[in-house]
Amino acid sequence: FGPKGLQQDFVSRFSAAVKTALQDRDIVEQLAKLGNEAKYAPPEELREWVSSASKHWSGVIRESGFQLQ
Image (cartoon, rainbow, N blue to C red):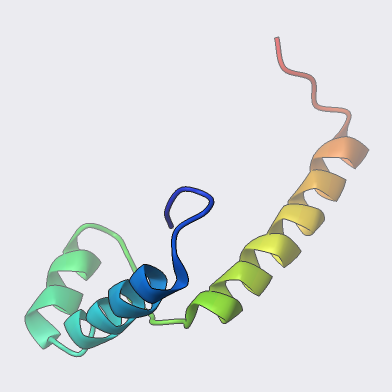
């Protein structure tokens, strides 16, 4: 994740670095110890997942009647 408007070349290089890092067993194990499941997804797939999850959970919240106080 990053701020809106990141240049595509940076996103591509960062994504490649994350993919490489997640091939390192020690890094994956350390993330697991922190309660994280390490799984690489290319930027486009991650963007689609976030969009889908946001739509789903906003509907759940709306239907629940939850209100911020």
